[in-house]
Length: 458
Image (cartoon, rainbow, N blue to C red; front, side, top):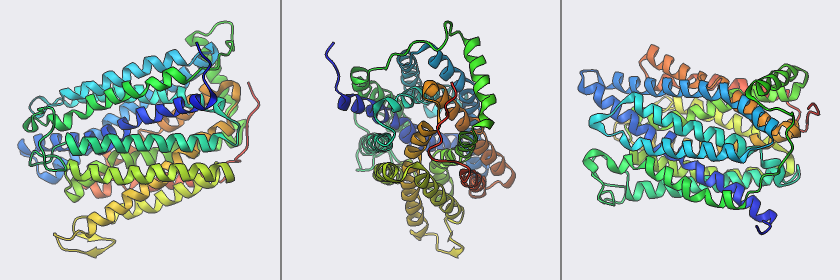
């Protein structure tokens, strides 16, 4: 086989971000999440529940579903990472989790309103999300092989920006030609293409097959151009029991590597809060501001565009200043945005009463969406380069498994506390207030992180 150039290897690696981003953009946040909330709340209202209570209950179901999925990912991620490092192989795992991604995404097609099953919808959603999260662990672990320590910040930022542009394009296609509003037409006023039945919400439900097909097609450059750096196994045997043993040794050593320990703790809180903002943003806009799926999609386009731009800009600053200033700025911005979101409702903005027909709440929420995208894009890109600077190069996949564990060990906190707060207050707006504390904890712990602390332990 012909030798693949370094430039092609980098582009192939970045195509994973392009291929996988629609699961976050279309499924988790801006199309399927709000659709889930809409269908569930409509069923509850039809059963006699008050509208406000039904919307809050739908948010609660989504929250508990994400909690269970997050716990599953948290338990398995570091073990799989240690197993992969011990075996010296990553690519077979990427193939396996790519299949899960596609199967889970296609399974969302069966979420038709008359036969809507909360259980099966969340099962298929979970299969796809687990596939995406685990594939990300193994592809992120390849980042150090693509350039020097100084170069990887720019590579990471460019990859994250490229992924956001993929999400923007997929979302535009979805809104213009497929996702229908309450009148059965798309954003440009046409019926869903391909003869899809708007009455059965086939246009919106096609988000699953579109996401799965998008991934399958655009992962081709990754599998063609990315060459795994083959390493000998770290141990003569590499069964699951050995992987668990090695993982336990690494975890016991964490307190002695204070910078890595502080960074994993910090990221545990701020990434959980950011995921909460992405996950519940569309559902919040639907319930509090009365937006349609199409309205939420436009919000998503703006957030994704600013995310793409600032992930790239953040990569430039990451290369020049290191990842810590980029991470600090991102968390602080998101903390302020989260406070702002709680102060926006249909009848008031930052405590100022507005009329029911006022567009000010919508405009304010659009601005918040742009800031979430901008800060989130730069923050996530810089976060993975920070981990590369902190981790032991010989156990990079395990490190990203621990990173996933840090992101998922408390991943139940955002959805669970939102679900509980929503249940206790009966208010979607007050339900998202726990995110403020999560961002604050993450910002506080970041002060103990040394940007260039890289452990030498095997």
